[in-house]
Image (cartoon, rainbow, N blue to C red; front, side, top):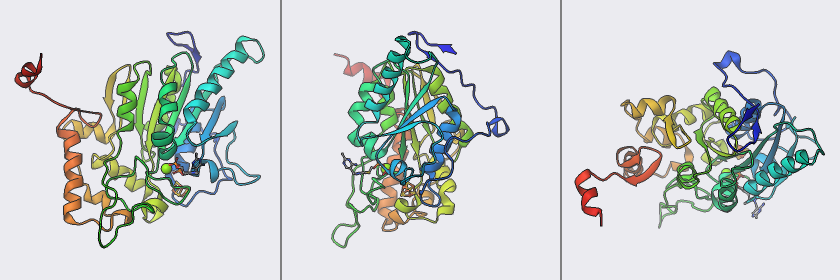
Amino acid sequence: MAETTFGNATQVLEPFRGIKKVTLEEYFTSGHRTCQGCESALVMKLMVKAAGPRTIVLGSTGCMYVANTTYYTTPWVVPWMHTQLGSSGSAALGTAAGLKALMRKGKMKAEPINVIAFCGDGGGADMGLGAISATLTHKEYNSLILLYDNESYANTDIQLSGLTPYGAHTTFSPPGKVHRLIHKRWKKNVAGLMAAGHPECRYVATVCASYAVEMMNKVRRALTIGGPTFIHSLDPCPKGWDYDPMLSHELGELAIETGIFPLYEVEDGVVKYYGKTKAIVDGRPRKPVREYLLKQGRFAHFTEEDLGYFQEKVDEQWEKWEIPGVVPFRKLDAAQAALNVK
Ligand SMILES: Cc1ncc(C[n+]2csc(CCOP(=O)(O)OP(=O)(O)O)c2C)c(N)n1
Ligand code: SF4
Ligand SMILES: [Mg+2]
C-alpha cells in the first residue's frame, strides 16, 4: 500500500517491465459488441488489466457503455456502473468519497480500491469538462479519469466533437460543393489543459494503445500516485475515421510519428516525453501529416492546401510552443520578455 501525502492509501502497482511481465488475467473479456478494429475496446481491456481485480469502473454514455452492455451480456469482470454522458468526473468523485466514508464508518473493509471513470471525447472534453475539472481539484479522493478519444460522438453516428480534428468529415461536417471544409476549429489540447490548470492533480498523461505496455504503465502510475489523476487516450475508430480495421494499430503509431498526438506525462509538474515522441523532441524528423491523414476516408476531400495548413499547425506545436507538444504559450526571447515587463 502506498500512503500519499494526504493520507489516502493506494495500491502499489509497479510498472510492467516488458510485455512478458504483463499479468495474464483479463477483466474485460468477451461479451461486447464493438466494431472490428475498435481501439477504444482495446483501451478498456488494457486499462483494467493494468488496474487489476480490486477496481471499480464507471463509464459515461457512449460506445464504451452501449456496445459493452448489450442486454444480458457484458465483458466487465470487475464491478462497473454506467453514468450520465457529462458525469464521469462526478461519478469518480462520488464513488471515491462514498468508498472512503463506508470504510471510515467500518461498513466495509478498509482497503485501497481503484476507482476509474472513463468518458469519450464528447462526454469528457465537451459536456463533462466542468465535472472533470472539479474532480481534479479534490486531492483527498483517489480516482483516475480516462478520456478515450475517438474524435467524434461515435455512438450516435459520428457527430463532431471538440476533439474532432480540423477539416474532418463527420455527419455534422460533410464536405460539400460550396464549402469543402465545414469544420474549421483546431482540436482542444485537453491533456495540456488538465495539467496546466489543476495544481492539485499530480498526474496527467497521454497514451495510445498501439504502445500497450507504456499505456498500462501510465494507468498503474496514475493509480499508485493517488489523488485525482487524468489520462487522455487517442483511439483510432474504423467506423468514424473510415479506414480498414486492420490499420488501427498503424494509425495510432502514425499519430505519434507525425507529431499530431504527443505521448507524455506530467508528474508533479515535471514533463516527461515517451517513445517516438521523445525521439522527436531529441531531433528525429516527424513524418509528414499526410501519411496519417490520407489513410482515412474522413480526410479524403483534403486538397494540398488543406494538408499544408494541417502540417503548419502541427509544426507550430513543436517549434513555437513553450513546452513542445504540451503547453501552447509562445516563447518570448529575453529582450522581448524584458520589454513586456511593466
Ligand atoms: C445529455 C445527453 N445528450 C445526448 C445523449 C446521446 N448520446 C449518447 S452517446 C452519445 C455520444 C457520446 O460521444 P462520446 O462521449 O465521444 O463517446 P463515443 O460514443 O464516441 O464513444 C450521445 C450524444 C445522451 N446520452 N445524453
Ligand atoms: S464506432 Fe468506433 S469507438 Fe464505437 S465501437 Fe465502432 S470502432 Fe469502436
Ligand atoms: Mg467519442
